[in-house]
Amino acid sequence: MTATPPRRSSRPHPFGRAACAMITPFTADGALDLDGAQRLAVHLVDAGGCDGLVLNGTTGEAPTTSDEEKTELVRAVVDAVGDRARVTTGVGSADTRHSAALARSAGTAGAHGVLAVTPYYSRPGQEAVLQHLRAIADATDLPVLLYDIPARTGTPLTAETLLRLAEHPRVQGVKDCAYDLLKSARVMAETGLAYSSGCEELNLPLLAIGGSGYVSTVANVAGRQVRSVLDAHESSDPAEAAARHLALVPLIAAVMASGTPGTVTTKALLNATGLPGGPVRGPLLAAGAELTSHLADTLRHITGQEQPAPALAV
Image 1 (cartoon, rainbow, N blue to C red):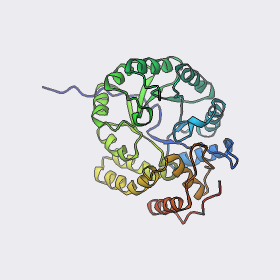
Image 2: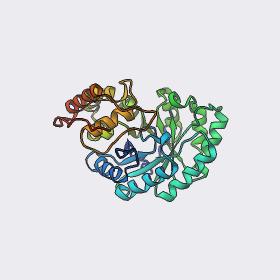
Image 3: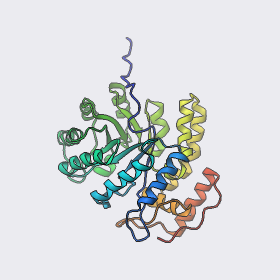
């Protein structure tokens, strides 16, 4: 019996293959720092090798930014790099009407795509999740990147729901944080969805089974190193890709598995290296001096950068 080959799309990647889940810079007093956001976006594209930026997600502190701030951030980043990188913005909420309104405003602000997470806290069933995400896709002309992250939302996207959502013309990809490679492989085999890893440690494993790229938090501080794994994979050099992936593990562990949210550790590193970051908003708390020193030492070891400056007081 001859296996049916996976159905793959020939269109350009709608969200960028090497995408960064960008933090939202704030000023010292906690206000939105649009100038800092533009400077960071340019740095991520020019120095970090990113061809996509995902704004207003978990890393971007979306739960504590207003709708107006989200829109202003999209406009500023699109103005800075929108001709050189795909700009996707999060529109997720636990309210279908609110998410649909955010999706409509994303297009007006100039975004190239929207990131739609399953509703959180209320934990609706699969049919309700399906209707919620379809309503978002119906509300916009932009491509939709589904966000499958049950550890945060309490609600997974089942393979069956993903297959049904893939029938919608604007549902074009998945940011995969489900830690279920069997499910991911099944959906990739049966659809043309672009699968981007949202879990740093699974960037290369997902690529190996047909993934199209990543949406990385670590890329805020080590974009070139994260991109180098993708480059080696695309050059059909699995041994080099594995070596580069394994070399990043200490930084991935420090940023994402230190017991402190990735937003906090990433902003600590950005502040320590002089890039726009600023404080975090409550309920998050800034990283302490000991953790910041460990993060900086690990980053220096991975990237070969000079000793970072002391962390900024925020």
